[in-house]
Image 1 (cartoon, rainbow, N blue to C red):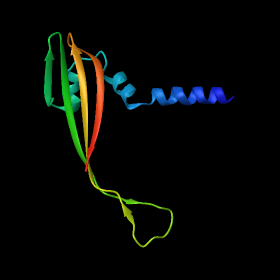
Image 2: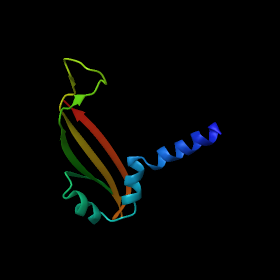
Image 3: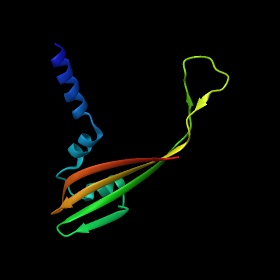
Image 4: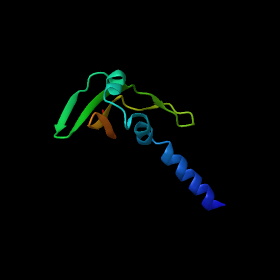
Length: 107
């Protein structure tokens, strides 16, 4: 019973990942879909037969109070951070063949 539960949990985690979702959405499609969704790419890297379209989305995450589940006089507050998401789409013969996502946080 335990093995079945672990197997189901593993399959669920793999199928629900952001990377897998990006691959399902964009693999095999033309780069025009990217322009509709993300706009103009920040950079296009030309590697001969392949091109890599780089899109960058910067979001500011505001500071928030961290709940400690008890009464305190000095609340803990998380710092404000800047979240940068970089999407890399590899295009070969006018079809998207690879998708990669990088996330970076700066204080």
